[in-house]
Figure 1 (cartoon, one colour):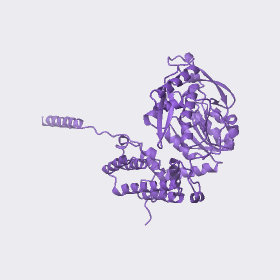
Figure 2 (tube, helix red, strand yellow; figure 1 turned 60 degrees about the horizontal axis):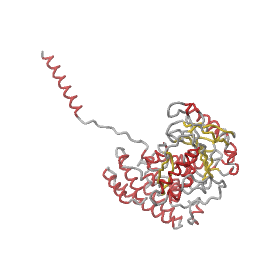
Figure 3 (cartoon, one colour; figure 1 turned 30 degrees about the vertical axis):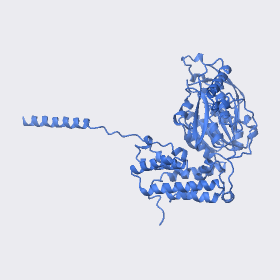
Figure 4 (tube, helix red, strand yellow; figure 1 turned 30 degrees about the horizontal axis):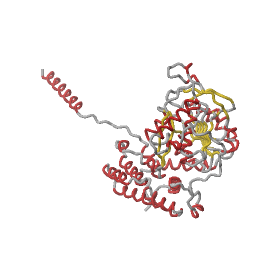
Length: 495
């Protein structure tokens, strides 16, 4: 009996223990981005304040390094003139355990950065250089300041609309000039704007809706055989400047732009900006509504030739070039890119995504699920070698997002690639497409350095371009050293 009673007591105790555990609140382990601190630290080192100000409390509060993230967010707020928000993030960093020494270091670094920007605006490049270097050394005394200084200077001068000194000689004699006056001139004349730009920006009530209504009429009259969605607009802010985009309501890319108030695929765009050769021509193959083209021309200051064959997207792209006053910098061409001249028919692969037009009808379905009811758009095809005959040695970047036609477009660009040795950024939807492109470009001494974006996009550089090798060296070293930026032992300065 005693044995049975003891067994019952143990079972009762076990049930009580389990019940007590179930009654306690569940401790949630919140997921977090393991690479966030490294990315944010790199943004601070470069002085990419626009990215830092997008850090929000609800994004970082469950991160194990939240105190440092809050402090770096504060640095971004101070540098962009949001002092009150900056103070709030400093207090948050302190509440989360950030030490006073690190707080003072980051704040002092911010003072040096502001003094450096003032010196740059005054035309005193050597003084600007010293302040930028001090800003980096205060927080990262053991780092290779030469590499970080170059990146910081490029970013700060670009934010100020100034041409960055490219060598020590230029640093000694530098005087400010407005950003990028290009010797390369685009001679193509764009079609007229589908939107009345003056009405769009008019302060008079009803003028903007009228401009959108007239743009909708333009699309409806141009494409009577197709269903034309409602015309809408979105704006994004970058480095204090606002950029405007006309688009179709519900379209995927503008929806993402509106959600975050920034350019679509910002990390990708920033990487290309760092690899760009100032003054070089940028090719935007598959430009869609102009997110990338407007960034290339409006933010980076580069001359752009943008290819968009689909009529809806071409109309929006053209409108957005005019809305952002970039018609002198962006040459818009309604041409598909391939390996020979001809014509293809495009259909929309994904309903509600006007960036998904493809030449393969098997990938598409109409809204009713009937592939035979799809609207077909016949478009001309040309090659980059033919289209860029006047710019054979001038191309800095070729960006391709062509819904499966990327290999053909590269085969049609062999002469341009051999002559210009550009950075090549190309979407590869599948591994087999990537392998095909890798083999094609590998035959021209190109190699991959990185990949990005939701749809895999690979960045290729040329072994025969000395500037690419220098950029790769900087990129790899900064990535390698940056992994240990939080290590006190690694960054310990000599006594």
